[in-house]
Amino acid sequence: MRILIATGGTGGHVYPALAVATELAERGHKITISCDGRVKKMVRDGKAAHAKMIHIWASGVGAKSRVQQIYALFKIGVSAIALTLRFALFRPARVVAFGGYASVPAVFAAHVWHIPTFLHEQNAAIGRANKFTMRWVKTLMTSFPTVDGMPKKSSARVVYTGLPVRRDFIEYAGSKLPNKSHLLVTGGSLGAQILDEVVPVAIADMKNKKIFVTHQTRPENVEKLQRFYAEHKIHANVLSFVHDMAGAIADSDLVISRGGASTVIELETIGRPAIIVPLGINPDQAANAASYARLGGGFAIEQSKFTPKWLTATLDELFDNPSRLAKMAKKSCVENHAVKLISDTVTK
Image 1 (cartoon, helix red, strand yellow):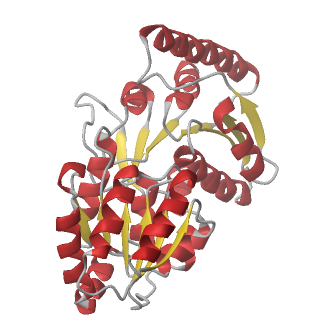
Image 2: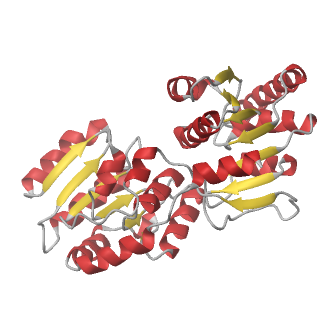
Image 3: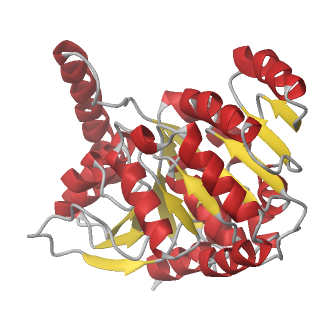
């Protein structure tokens, strides 16, 4: 079967798409991956064996000036026409879109040619691009059991599949807590200023400082945080990039992080307690964090309430009660069969 997989924008869209592309290629299907220029290298380096790649013209629409938004919409429109014409000659049997504005042209072209289309929503609140394209898709696949903001008039079938993660996270799935008082702090690829400001101060005020901290931050903040931890006799490893995030999460008894969908699902896959501080301006992260907190494996706390005083009390209570951390770890763990479930759904 010939299948086109549409992705782009960020790694959060690309890595799940590549995981599914690899599985479908291993099942013998002919895969083409469409992406925009922002992630072209990422797709080229990680694409499934023998998969073809086509480049489309697209960029995000939100958080821009009116002129930039019009230009972004123009690019998406041009790409939609180009893919529609391409499908006249090279028509896939299925289109699988992994969200974001880069997936809109493929979904539109599939609608024109009446091609069964499957859309994946990474977050616990549906994004603007996915909400717009829902009118044209056969099936919406979700990362979380419930998704906020779903169009009321949509006729699409909704299937909870979970979010694909890299295989190294699956290898640690359900592993026991190390019980070594390890704390991992990660604010995503660019770090998070609020975590840099609050976490070190909170740890310095803890009654029991016998914890080891791995703190991922922005490159320009590494030296400052290293100095702070050293001055307060806190054992810490401060770095700007975590090369083995699966191992770092598995080696932690507690994680403090932002609420990106990939991060939350990675925590659930391995099964680790966490304090999640969603980005204040991002409703998707707030929904992701709330979904995680409902499992009972951790806390979702608004950035405005994430203070050193609150965090000190919370860390003291948790690290003084390892049995509670162990119970939270079990509650947070969710089996991840997303790659198989998505592949099965698409090829039925």
